[in-house]
Amino acid sequence: MYTDPAVIQFIDDHFVPVRVHVHDQADEFKRLGAKYNAQWTPTVLVIDSQGEERHRIEGFLPAAAFLAQLALGLGHSAFARSDFAEAERWFRQVVERYPDTDAAPEALYWAGVARYKATGDAASLHETAQQFQQRYQSTSWATKASVWN
Image (cartoon, rainbow, N blue to C red):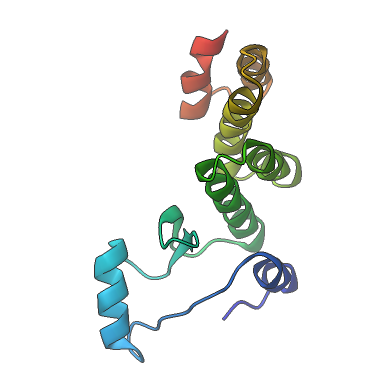
């Protein structure tokens, strides 16, 4: 299904992939599509062990952008488990490895939130807002973080 070696390795290392084909498995696609409100293909869902959706990727992306979204999904999954240190690690990985992707500003925002949730120290939010002044200034994530200045 995926041809990029880095994507294949990342998925093998971090996920239990399940593929449901819209035509070849029409009944299962219909059932899961209804359960998870999948309206378009491809739709890639990061689902936790309880079957809860933690992140959604719709449409095709180049490898770097797709990897960034997958890592963002792992961060959101860790955050939902209240494992804020792991969540921050995933979010920071997105910013460091994939800084030019659409996922990076969102990851920067959530990295600051995860650190705050882990420590209770509001300085982490202020530091995140400062980082947005240096990068990703014109994003909605920068606007959301602006109240932390």
